[in-house]
Amino acid sequence: MKGSKKCPNCNQWSEWNQDKTDRCEYCGALLAPEVVEREENREKRKKEQEDEWIFNIQPDDSPFKVFLKKIGKVGYVIFMAIVSFIVWLIAFLPG
Ligand SMILES: [Zn+2]
Image 1 (cartoon, rainbow, N blue to C red):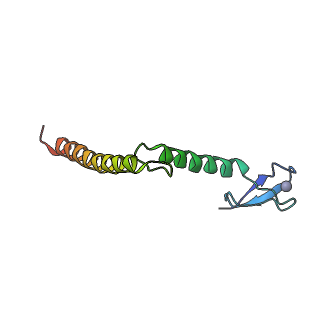
Image 2 (tube, rainbow, N blue to C red):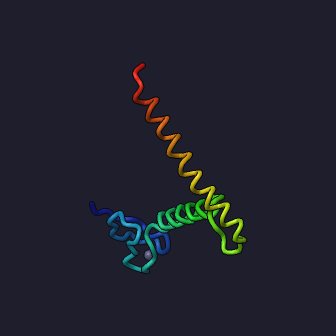
Image 3 (cartoon, rainbow, N blue to C red):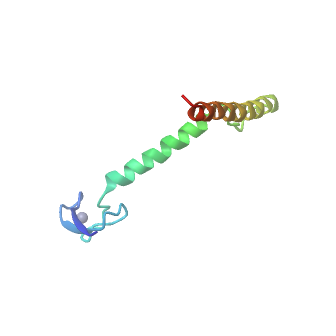
């Protein structure tokens, strides 16, 4: 599907294939910088959330802390497995 989009930089109408990486034919600016920005923000937020996960081992953790986090991680995985099993059980129980 082809279309055209007004360049946010020079206000000329450029051919646009709905692609976030398409650039203006006149000045070379990105035609959809807001889309690129939004995706970058989403990636960043995802990464931040992963970094904040309590069991993630940080470079400055002591060996004891690393040990605790590893146990916590295994415990978390087992806990999640039990929870999803219970959810599955409830979903399949008659009535
Ligand atoms: Zn332009």
